[in-house]
Length: 95
Image: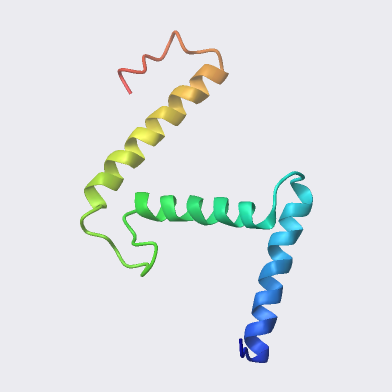
């Protein structure tokens, strides 16, 4: 491949960034970490109603993202209450 100097520097910097993360997470490859992160960001963008490829609003997903965000928020409140030992006080059906 014929790459310019800038392209080579960016690719090398990106490689170094993922390898620095992998150094803190033994047993995983840089590709596994990169794939996990990119999947996480893609799901987050979709929940926000944003197309992960073009970063433009997805009108067909806005209603779905609102439902998902509210259900995720309610689930996190319930899990937090379980950690505090208040699972008998807060009814999950009420959330």
